[in-house]
Amino acid sequence: MALREALAASGRVSLAEDVTHALLSAASLSTEFLGESRVTLKKILRESSDQLTSDERARMWDVVKQLDETFRAHFKSKVT
Image (cartoon, rainbow, N blue to C red; front, side):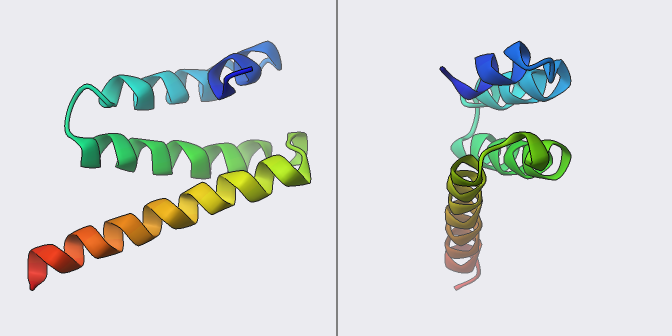
């Protein structure tokens, strides 16, 4: 089940809407999509961490870390 559907099915409609917003941002700039995804994942982890399995939390944090690294590399390349 996709994250958006899983959130909606568990009653976390607001977070599901955040995921939808992040997905819709994919049609625009890739950095905007990645930024929206990063914000949304952090919000899910902050607001629903107790409703996620340890594996789900670990996978989400792994994605957040990857996004953080991508942004650091992207902005570093803009500076140099």
